[in-house]
Length: 268
Ligand code: ADP
Ligand code: MG
Image 1 (cartoon, rainbow, N blue to C red):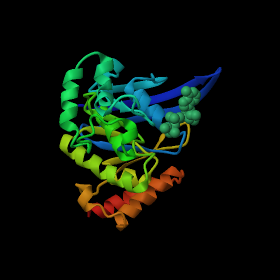
Image 2: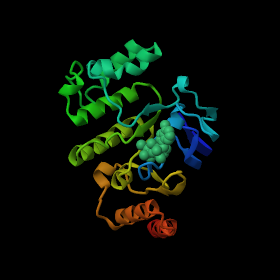
Image 3: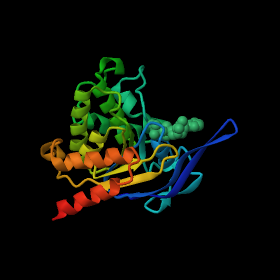
Image 4: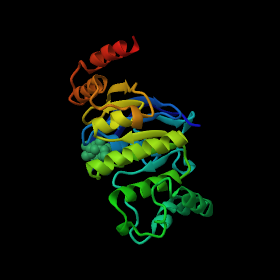
């Protein structure tokens, strides 16, 4: 099982002779089995952060390790689902979800067998032969998530996987994702710009400042699990956490102190 560690990570894009600083001095650890969300305004560097962790980009400064080992894309230490990740329209569901092992040139048969077993859990029973155009938006996202699962890593990097869904489907998929996570206890790094979604799902929420992204708040979410049963979006504790996150997003300096007060209150 795997611990992900970022140490003083910075990244600058080089674009037409110009340097664009995207992330600055990011240090964080994601423990084995933890569900951590990253929130931040558009352009804060959230997608850049996941690309760095997946090994597609290399940090300008700093180190990223899994269990003390430097990230290398070919080692499959993490499974990355990019933002706007689309299924290939000319392949059916099963052909789409085994794409990872197929490209790697190994484990395709095993992945196919596992995919068939997992179709019901992913709400896709009977749809293995269906093409993306025949699926609902929610089903397409669950298929894309199954593809990420089948990469075979216990760290999942998910970039706004529910961003394009309507509110009801989105809520349904959040609950479903927690069900799956509770069964497998994967480590999840989940990017969203939706504060409520981050609160509902996470053990911790990390807030990035506008570009260049730096960590302005790293907040534990103490609400009982399973959240599907216990979460009350209108409770004062949830609203106070939500307020603290929104303040941090707006760069209000008292964000940390207000949440410290709340956590002292909760621990009494
Ligand atoms: P987010 O996912 O939080 O919206 P991104 O990580 O996509 O943010 O982008 C962070 C910043 O880096 C943005 O200001 C964006 O314009 C810039 N950026 C992203 N990709 C590139 C690139 N290939 N070249 C130059 N700048 C980029
Ligand atoms: Mg993004």
